[in-house]
Length: 253
Image (tube, rainbow, N blue to C red; front, side):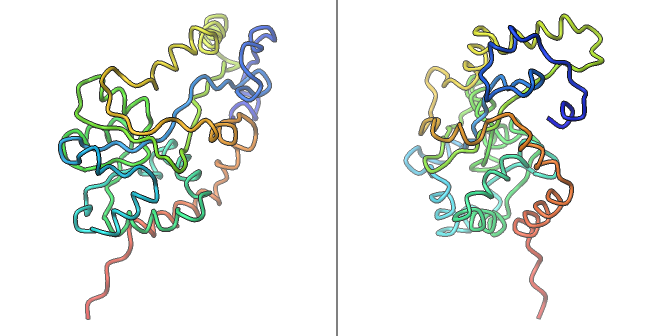
């Protein structure tokens, strides 16, 4: 969005752009082509299905009820490294009744941080951590397809959802092929391929479903997304997050 807003994008032809719904495009330049709900991923060997927390509130409660059991056993994005993690955390922060308690619980539990969803899924599968928070659903299911012994929870109270988006740049080396590729992404075939990435694999252990009611307010492609790029806001948000999950050690004496 920032690149398109500064004139770096080439618009698609109107008949091509019309294949995408209005909420999924901006000025025929930026096109959202898939959705990525944020999920919990847990180790099925170490956590029975009936013990997996099914909501953000339930996760906070289990961390508070038995802090030692969770110490060093939960992971999430390092939002300083990961754009996806930063975006998901910003949505979480709009859930005012839970966000402060959530990140404080992460701090008490000595949360481990990761750059990427695939690294979190692998860490859960190895047993390095018990549960990973805000993993992209397509990566969770990719782990299951690869035989990783992990379960997936689509939280029942709220779900952060991102879009994957694309644009053709004005200085693209091969504009016709770039436009054709983007057209494929937003076509019925491309949408079917994208949907398959967040469809449960055969035999998947998945708790919960994608909440359709969450989508409309989260995934609209418009200039409001640019607020996430404000440097002062980003610095304040990361400072608050870091202070909560990396609390200072108590002074001696």
